[in-house]
Length: 127
Image 1 (spheres, rainbow, N blue to C red):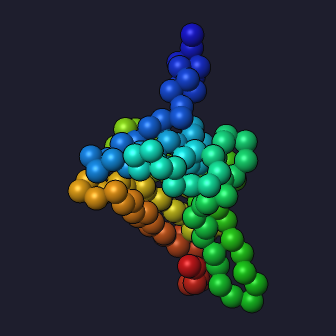
Image 2: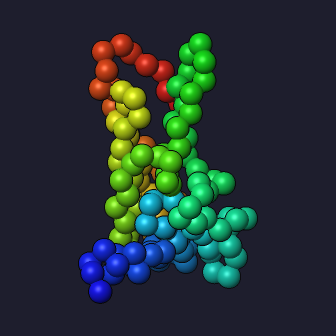
């Protein structure tokens, strides 16, 4: 079995918090499911082929509204995941992004850490 096949066989990868929150992540950085105990927190399971219904989006404000998903197959980002968390890094137009999923240790909560860097000349307004 090749190392690429072994990598694919590892997914969905489970991230566990000491407070009982479990997140399953697909190889492309999309969330498959989130659970606390025996309760599934998301309504639909995410998969490798379609973007998940729940996502983070980078939206540019201005004359027209542009939006880019930051997770999943359409994000253009590279996902790195281990048992402690998820990080997706990529770029859309002149914005570099880094998104990290962090699970709280003492309570069943999660946090998204988002970093943006404008690599272009003119200032931009994003939300």
